[in-house]
Image 1: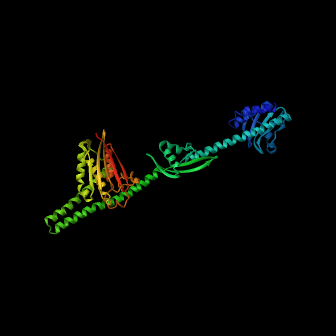
Image 2: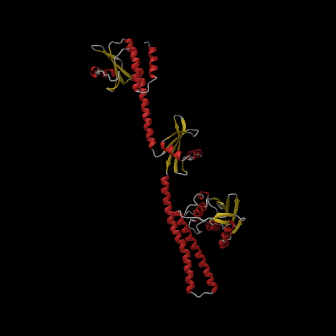
Length: 466
């Protein structure tokens, strides 16, 4: 066979190769074209790895003493036997023996055939080395992918277009369960943020981003750690702390009116007083008892919030009457704070729990009055009622001290109070707005807040009419 034909035949057979076994099958087919043999065995580190025909072996004792010499020489050798020859063909690359082909033949090949066999063994060595390298790379990739996929952190690689090129198993789960997470991550990356936290409707994630250069291309390596459990533990600790502070705060709140009532009653019992003085003292006792009633009402509502037992009883009512009554209830407070209360409401019937909706209006109105800005010459609270078809909007707006934007999501949480030196002097349990939100949502409505520190605060309550 001419060398050109040999190379063509080799390329044809080698195109079918997928592993070592198929390589040896291809080599066997090519060898049959240049030398006649009855049995072909392949040894790798003295272990038989292939035979043709399958199951037939050449006695190793015949040639084993020559194997070290073949490894050193790296050239085909044919040993004479009584009835033929044993051919030892090294499969090698550079100076490294990769395996040894042993054939049993009845004729001694010519020098030209041996040269062909030498070329074949060298080409097979290159192919075998590549197969082993590919197998090593595949196993290494599988090994590292297994490690990466076992990681508790999600790993994502993005290209320059912010498209996903790789995700491990954890990242796939995170992105599948939290569809908004990837968009949030990309937005933060575009803002050049490297470490940040993202809260979705289901979970809380800590994200770290690193710009890297892989194979000459710029990539973005994103590490996603689910810290929901840690956040929940942190929230529980914060809640325990808040509850402790709440107990201390409510104890103080209860003690203050009780101490005032006790002091005034003791004075009335132990000192001669005029009718006018008695009336004045009774006014104080009455106002403090009202304060006690409010605190106890908050505690009862808090208990219902915790146990999810708060209920509403709907009836047809005129919302304007509720607002007017709420304003009357807080008339004295507004006068003390020098706050003007305005309202705009036309007769409007809705179905709601009269008592609970009045509780909402009184709470929002009293907060607006209590947190009025005493530095301003004119202080006001305005209530607007808007009829919008199937729904009604109640807007309570003031020009008080305002609420920082960072507190918008927290002010409706139980026990939360804005940490502001202007709020310290105002008594309260931190339950009011949490109760308001619960009542509004029980009516299938919602409540929003808009505010700017030092300028205004606006609460918008939306309720269905029926």
